[in-house]
Amino acid sequence: MSGWRAWLPPLLAPLGGVLVWLAERIWPGTVASPYLAALGAALLVVALALHLPPFQEERGAGSLRGATGWLGAPYALFVLALALYYGSTLLRGHPAGMVDWRGLARAGWMLSLAAGAVLYVFVTLARLAQRRAPQPDARRIRLAGSAGLSLALLLVLVALLNFVFAGLPWEWNLAYFKTTRPSEATRELVQGLTTPVQVGAFFAADSEVGPLVHSYFDALKSSSDQADKLQIQFADADLQPALAETFKARGNGWVVLRKGALVRPMRVGEVLGQARFQLRNFDRNFFRTLLEVSRPPATVYLTIGHGERNERGGSATPGGSFNRFRVVMRERNYTVKDLGIGQGLGDRVPADAALVVIAAPTEPFLPSEAAALRHYLDGGGRLLAFLEPRTGPVPEHKGLPGVTLVQLLRDYGVEFDPTVQDNDRIYARRTYTRADHTLLVTVAYQNHPSVNNLRVASGQFPLVLLGAGALRIGQVPPGLTVQDTIKAMPGTWGDLNGNFEFDAAKEHRDTPALALAVAPKGAPEAQHAAAGAAPKTNGPTMLVFADADLASDLLIRNRANLTAVEDALGWLVEQDKPVGLPQTEEDVRIRHAKGDDWLWFYLPVLGVPFLLLGFGFWQAMRRRRRAGGGDA
Image 1: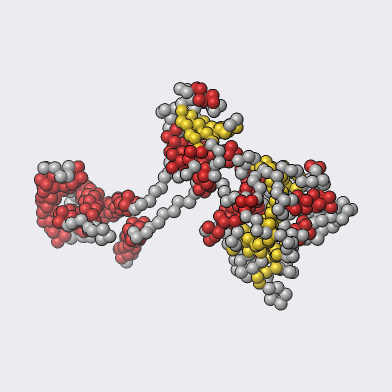
Image 2 (image 1 turned 90 degrees about the horizontal axis):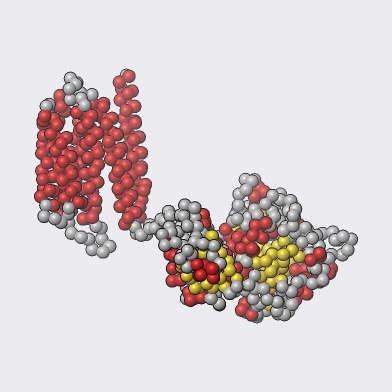
């Protein structure tokens, strides 16, 4: 076929496809729609009829051997598209829960038409470029067809993915400000408000950031029964200067929390790009600020002077210090102070102490210091103690008889075995040697308020400990209860000879306790002192951990370790339902459920890419075989 007849199929086929597309997608349901569709279908049929004679002629002559299939493939896709198009008009809608054949046919004809059009352009241009050549080059047409098919399949893949993701109930918000729904910790904090807290949000009317902050507070108020306790006002600081002065706002782009004379501002920003970091961490920052405003600051004392982890140089192990632990307490609005002989520990524990923390001392307490701690605990004080295997018997302190932390805790029914516990079945990897057997991992959380948040989804909160000892319940004094809160996983043993291997002759496997809780017998949690109040005379409340590394800078970044520390502080100091800090946006996991659409999920996500890879591999092997045959 030569001359003007050679140009008819390339003109008629695209025109017919465009007319069908216009009839179905641009002007559906109009008077002209069926006529445009019929005209487009007729043009496609005419283009196919004009193509068939020269197609058969070239195929018989062998001038395009191996390329005739590529020349006919677009027309086959056009015919398939027409069949699916008219078939979709005959099919009915599907009942609920049945396969939507009509929808599949309507999607199929568009994909077939688009794929055929792309492939048609490639092979037709390659064929027309050789219309004056005495002998057409079939190889050029095959290469053009392969490229066109690859692009067509890519377009089909994109369309299928769009179809699937649009049909499934998934959300994936990639905006700067994704915390449109406040965290559970923030909602619980608002739920527990006893007195109103005023919030002033100052943004200009045309601010890009203002609507995002507004949506956050709308979601917070709608999810809380105590929404009236959180009084939120939105204003433009330039238009309402009196209100801005009341909140002491420095201008627009600020969120200010106010309770009486206490005012705490939060800088957010007015420009979306500049406010990106503040928006991503808005929920966490608002939680901390609201906690600071709504609750009186509790004072936590950390003992010093005995080689504790919180002292400078208190740990010879990299990452063993308690710097991050101090940050966590400040984030919970605690005032953190040191307590040693120079701060009066030899006389008494300060009256404003809401909690005393003793972090793995390497030296004993002076008798006067131990007496002050006992007096504080017997009067209803609260203690968070971290032990280490090295906190066993130690020499006398400064030439005077001393009292170790182990001896102090023994008076309240807590016994400590300083033997390092190993597990060769369930452990974490660090050095990839047998020494990793001391890196214990556990999800054995017991029924106690101090581990409630860990027990909610224990499989997702593996606690990590490094070189832990073992705790057990000793002789409990009258009026106290001692309960294990965290236990090691089965198969744990005390490594008596330090070879990191289980010796059946000397050692035995067990599930030792890694944390113990001590509380007055029969005293409900609601009767404990509130944060910052003077201790009540109903006996001590304490949590004891068998490993100080649990809260060290090295391991506290583990989600379960951080949660364990936060819940321990919440149970000891606040004596209510522990409130954990909300996670930042970087920590939020996006989970997608496939549900009953598993076939549509895996077909485009896995099937089509493997189809492309398989086609490419087949093409490569086919070319190699031909090249090898030609050389032979």
